[in-house]
Amino acid sequence: MLLCADHSLYGGFTTDLQQRVTVHNSGQGAKYTRNHRPVKLIYHEEFATKSAALKAEYAFKHQSRSKKLAYLKLHGVIV
Image: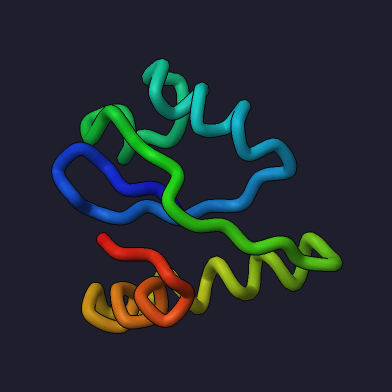
């Protein structure tokens, strides 16, 4: 989970967290993050399979902002 400069949240899938954050901050990442830089990595989870990771990403992205914030708070992230 990335926290963008405007305090919006962005979630995605990657196999290399630090490289992906660098790509987002360079403006070469997702279209959304290009206009919301800089971004900061605030939370991540690891999954046994790519399929499990993508399912979790999809479920998280389709929650309201308040539910996303509650989830992050439950996992020790203060936004």
